[in-house]
Length: 103
Image 1 (tube, rainbow, N blue to C red):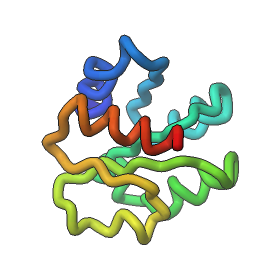
Image 2: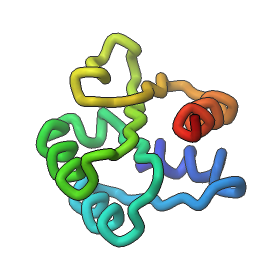
Image 3: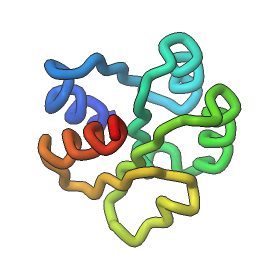
Image 4: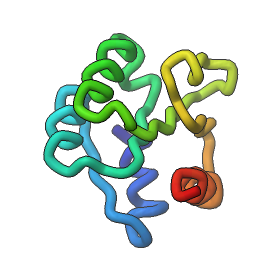
């Protein structure tokens, strides 16, 4: 949850952001707001990341996922992530991911 708060503080003024504390809340939020980009903290969802992503992709097969990880060797591509955000990250790294989505 701390990672999410940090991301909101870094990009929340330039972009509309939503924050959830759990994977279950993410489903409801995604269904309600259909955000363009989902930043998912691997550590928060790792207990059932396959199930979390399957549920979210069921809501939107074209989901653009940026996976936030502690170590770059975590298997982001295996989970269908279009972008990997390695902790610690910067505002410029988050902006680059947003720009990558827009292309």
